[in-house]
Amino acid sequence: MTRYCIWTIGCQMNKAESERLSSFFERLGYQPADNLEAASVIVLNSCVVRQNAESRVVNKLHALKQLKKTHPDVTLALTGCLVDSKTDQLRERFPQVDHFFKPGDLPDWLKTPEVGAALPQRPAPCTYVPIIQGCNNFCAYCIVPHRRGRERSRPVAEILCEIKELVRRGVKEVTLLGQNVDSYGHDLPDKPELADLLEELNKIDGLFRIRFLTNHPKDMNPRLIKAIARLDKVCEQITLPVQAGDDEILRAMRRGYTVAQYRRLITEIRNQIPEVALSTDVIVGFPSESEAQFQHTFNLLEELRFDTVHVAAYSPRPGTTAEKLDDNVPPAEKKARLSKIEQLQEKIATEINAGLLGQTVEVLVEGKEKGKWQGRSRSGKLVFFSSQRDCLGQLKNIRIEKTSPWSLQGKLAE
Image 1 (cartoon, rainbow, N blue to C red):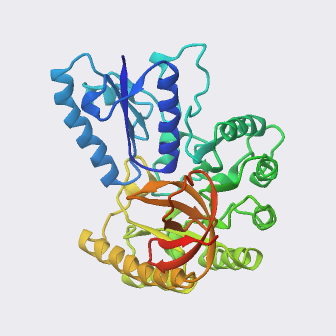
Image 2: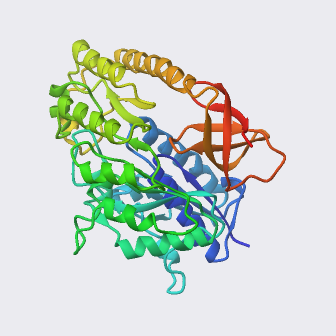
Image 3: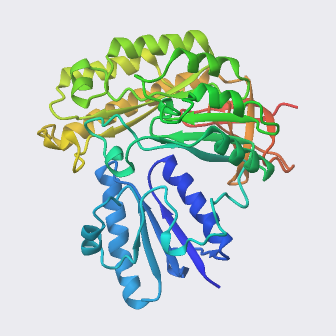
């Protein structure tokens, strides 16, 4: 029996692609292995968005070099954003790897005409569905367009067909994925927008919830905001990366909007969707970011009060525009700025979540952890509760009895 193992790091797109790879292998008759050492086919799904992620991938590849020496019959493959068009250089750098394939592709060396597109055979209640690959924005710091290419949208009919089949197999919630979901459809013949796709998905019987990420502030339009407010299955949760709160830094990042424009967009979203939970991404220590410019970012986060902030220290990525800039913010200063934002956000999240104490929220149950059921509210809050019943895949009303910055605890309201 052939056993496979997929090691995944990085974004939700990587996780979605690994799920499809798993299904692909299982349709070929392969069985999952408990760990890398027990597998005869190993796939590493890589990320290089940050230096830390790339280093973890490289370290894993070096560790597997010894495994290949002792078990030369093991097939080792590499995919994800470490793989670009220069596979000859990759083969020279990592001779232990047997196959390289681009992110989002299926492995050529295993393709058969009968297999076709891979879908999870035993889906969890919640799953990811990529709707657009690549990105046309070329932000100064970002490697993604260089590795995943230009934007390519999937047809509406294809996505509808896939999600209907996923629902038939037990999926209750889908998260639509794209490096920039707001650009969805512009490259298709009939130019559908994300709002049009949401309209169609909202009609699917048996589908409880719809989420999507990630948005780009310069591309999110009023029609999409109105669709989120109106469509009952679309969750009140929006990820809208700001990256910096200073106009000069935003220009250097090539983000295409100002702080004032971003602030107006947040105001419009909150006016249209009062219960919305907002999350954002921030990069600290971008080349030449002064203490005053960092403070502008800090002040903006303090003002706008996001439910979640993902913060990272800048690291230069080969091939990007920002690589040519002097990475002149000392590592210790980057770390200090990152820590300040993390502390601020922990305080804000504590206060926001405390407001849910005693409230009843609808939770879609995704599984169990340490003996408790867990799931998320429509606004994306992680909720834990106890029940002797089988609650998997069900919507449950949970009365919140304890809050923290990271999760909520409660009990069944009925």
